[in-house]
Amino acid sequence: MSEQEARALEDLLFDFREMIEQARMMPMSASVLVNRDEALAIVEDALASMPEELRRARWLLKERDEFLAEAQRDAGVIVDAARTQAERMVERTEIAREARRTAEQVIADAEADARRLTHEAEDFIDARLLTFEETLEKTLVAVRRGRDRLQPDVDPPGGPDTEADAASAEREFFDQDEA
Image (cartoon, rainbow, N blue to C red; front, side, top):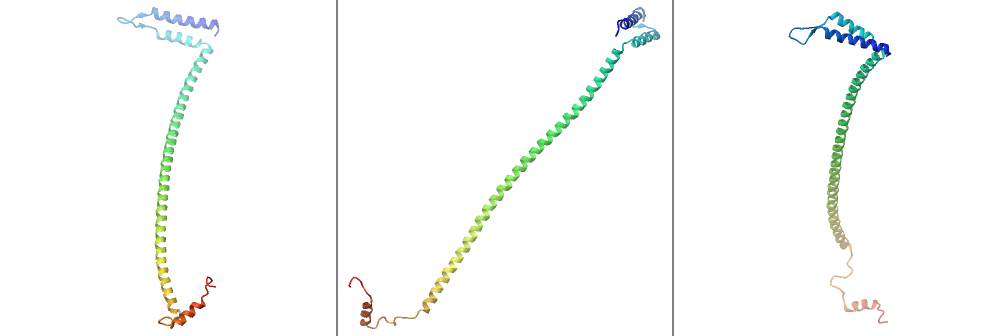
C-alpha cells in the first residue's frame, strides 16, 4: 500500500467519523440521524480505495479459515477411524484370547480323554490276558492229564516183583564213590 493510498483511506474514515459526530441527535436517545446515501457513498469509496494487499490478506484469511475448518473435519474423521480401528483391535485381541482359552480347554479335555481311554484299554487288555492265561492253564492241565493217560505203565501194578529185581536195578546204577 502506498502512502498516498493510505492517506486517502484515512481521509475517508475521518470524513465518516465527522459525519456521525455532526449528525442530529434523536430526541431522548443516544442514536443519531445519518444520511444513508452519504454514509454508504463514503463506505464504498473506502472499500474501493483499500489496497490490493489488504484484499489479498482478507482472501488469505478466508482461505486459512476454510482450510482450518476442513483440516478439523479431516482430523475428526481420522480420529473416528482410529477409534474404530482400536476398538476392532481390542475386540480381535479379546477374540484371540478367548480362542486360546477355548483351544487350551479342548486340548486339556482331549488329553484327559486320551488318558482315560488308555487306562480303559489297558484294563480291558489285562482282563482279556487274564482270561487267556486261565484258559491256557486249564488247557495245560488237560494236556498233562491226556499225556499222563497215554504213558505206558512200566512198573507192574504192585511194584517190583522181587527183591532180586530191586537189587539188580541197584547194581545197574554206577556210583563213582564205590569204584
